[in-house]
Length: 249
Image (cartoon, rainbow, N blue to C red; front, side, top):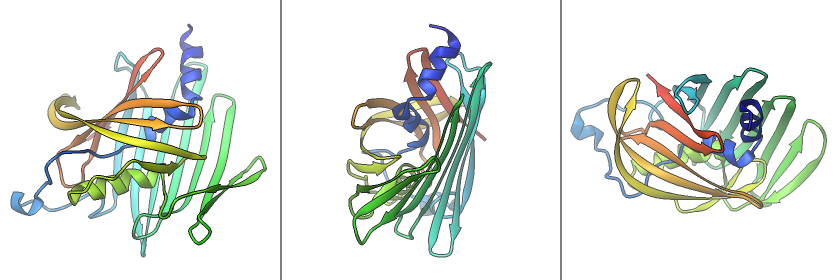
């Protein structure tokens, strides 16, 4: 398999790209007591934040970068993930934006992606009164998808999970929106010490299984033991090896 073809097929797999978006939190970890530690609470859900990541080849050679942002606007939250990576002859540029209520119920989700010559621009707008999410594409076409009450899109679910864990609660397996509905399940894998920026860092590992109508993907995530449950590292197994996204401090 050529490098270009292998990376291209991986990049165009929606299930694989969920792995770059679902920075989910942990099961069975102790509640962090920030007041006892005498620390000022920063990062989501206490403040807005911007987190920067390096997208790495299995050899740890950097392929590009990603940026995760949370902004509080009135009674709602706005979230954003942008990712730019590639190899010679094939580039990946993704931009995801979501807006949610104060309770972190999704209001809208937009994804604009360019994987080589393949482009996508889709919006999903949630109508909670009807229990539907309306999906519309810039290329044309509109469809309605049934959704549960207070459904989360992929990006909102990340932040919702972090907030819940910080309060000692673990989100149950549920449906999420990402150009359709997917089922997600978390499994705690234990404490791990991992290198982040060359510094050995204590983290908690969780495996995540995402199932769609015709796909199933399992990947690993590592989270700091801080009040914000900051995502440190994501490992995605693909045909060419395990790709990663590592926090840059």
